[in-house]
Amino acid sequence: MVMAIFFTIVHTPSVIAYIIKRAKKRAPNHRMTLQLLDPLHELRILLCVHGPDNVPASINFMEISRGATPPGIVVYVADMIELTDQIAETVERGADGRTTAVKDAATVEMRDKVTNSFQEYVDEDSESITLKRTLAVSTVTNMAQDICVLADELMIALIILPFHRNQRQDGKLDMGHQGFRYVNRKVMSKISSSVLF
Image (cartoon, rainbow, N blue to C red; front, side, top):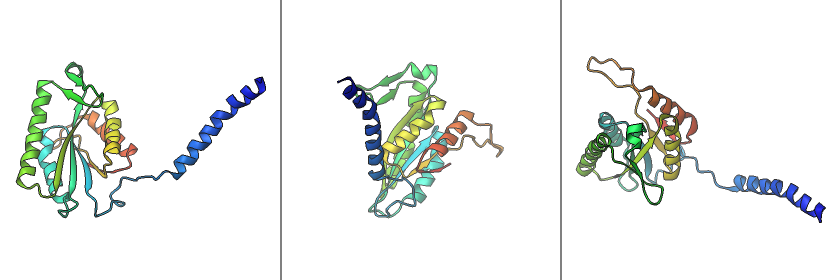
């Protein structure tokens, strides 16, 4: 009896590991890249923004990316919000655990401006664009992971990340937010989608 229990305990993990390994080989692997995208299906884009300053360039990108009317594009506009102590106090999780709401006044105002700008564009010329909103609220060290998980869940083919530096009035670039530079690099190294800055 002791020998039967011993061999059951010793061999069970290796048998399960073998079954999982075989199942992974047979499972279809969906590579989310533009090269493998079927032209008859919609293009799914995750368009990340830091704030209203990124909206004009993002709208220009949407304009040149939309294709023929039947498949069109689906654009998920994601606000990249760095989780600080002040914002953390206003974050509310939904009952399902999957939804997040930020009640910080400055963040709400910024999100409203971004939403209104994109909605104006879509209302004027929404023939082949479906616009959806989402949110990435996390610390700089975890934001890249959140963006990658969001892209996988939504089956995104193209991620657009804003550059971490901004152009000043004199035409030169400021130092920007080094945390967002870190996020951009981490997303580039982790994700299987196509990524643009």
